[in-house]
Amino acid sequence: MRSDSGDTTSLWMATAEMPSYPPLTEDATADVCIVGAGIAGITTAYLLTQAGKRVVVLDDGPVGGGETGRTTAHLSNAIDDRFYRIEHLHGERGSRIAAASHGAAIDRIEAIVRAEGIDCDFERVDGYLFLGGDGEEEELARELEAAHRAGLNDVEPLDRIPKVPFDSGPCLRFPRQGQFHPLAYLMALARAVTRNGGRIYTGSHVAEFEPKPRRPQVKTTEKKTVTADAMVFATNSPINDWVKMHTKQSAYRTFVVGCRVPRGSVPKALYWDTSNPYHYVRIQSGVNGSDVLIVGGEDHKTGQKDDAAERFIRLEAWAYDRFPMIRSVDYRWSGQVMEPVDHVAFIGHNPGSDGKNVYIVTADSGQGMTHGTIAGMLITDLITGRATSWESLYDPSRVSLKAGVEFARQNLNVAAQYRDYITPGEVSSPDEIARGSGAIIRRGRHKVAVYRDETGAVHERSAVCTHLFCIVDWNSTEKTWDCPCHGSRFDPLGKVVNGPAVAPLAEVEDD
Image 1 (spheres, rainbow, N blue to C red):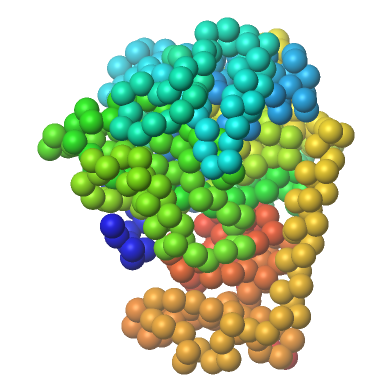
Image 2 (image 1 turned 135 degrees about the vertical axis):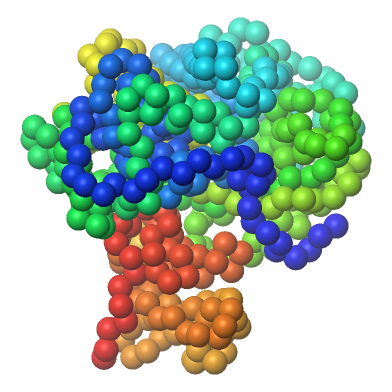
């Protein structure tokens, strides 16, 4: 069993061809400008170009280079937060819409794969929910009844998961789930966008947003402007909103290992347990007579722990205990999950006065591939004026009084992070920082994010996140500065990796 932190390149990034797209070099206009080239942004672009819209897509990284490239690519209408919780918070109608929309997303992916002839390993598979940790059969019974009320009448209880090498105990079977290679799918979808007349620009960091009443604008770091009739922010965490949306969701890191197993030794299916945080498992076809067993879990709030090596070890131990045929652990990676306080993504009109022609997609809640596809379908309907029954459930303006306790708990956690302003630094001198690592140093009134590169050169930036001014923390596995408040992330030199921050960490101030 490996115990070092290892390479954190995902299976998908290691096995996909990543086409390049040019940066934006001159001002542009469009019917719709989409910021973000992950599953939500590219799916929205694809469906809008099919509807005849002129579309521009902007991203500061490559297509799929953000969280889409770090998913485990479960395609499921089995809600990971449970249907009985969705029903409690959103009523039976909301639960039925959630089930139907996730099912429709899988159907739409399958239809696109067929229509475009995409070779992305798409398969229909069963999904199994089984007990984990201190889980009790009563939870499975509650979920079965709630799933049936949500319209998933073919969900059934079983005594155990068939043909797996461990005794799962009682479980629920969710038929006709799906899986695919997310980047192979996304790259083909991006090519279809450009074929349909859409324009994709990567290496183009959006630094400013102007919510004009008629035609909103975004401006890149290079001062190039895109003006459009409608603006869509599909950036994992919305970069156009300063406070409101970020009080209703929380950023978590989730961890994944990819284990090599003999071909066919584990049935292809989706597996989840009831632990908190839960484990999630699937199989991807590998090479040379092997498959890759993908195992995820061990989540923690972004920026509030730096113990990835231990979490990978726990995941591996959990996997080896249940799948003794594992030959090696070939991949390790982590991703960022935005968890909404009421368990449903925020997709639709941006809250506030600019909401008429500005749309957001966020709070994927660990089901980003189906939520991203739902976003493409729903936002296309909203922009083209087609009637949709999904709008109210996913409305970003919604306020759930029943989620008030969770709302308060999450925001008290955020408030507690500001105490970092008065704590000491982690080290007193850059000389104490190992090469290729970073640490926070207190220098008078200021906290400084100090990175020592592999050559020994020292790089200093302010440790204050440029979003809502929390103190960032060093992530030793990903080699990023992570904000413990709302999940913004920066590379070792302070450049934005993940919003909601749009500006880099500032230069160090003098006392």
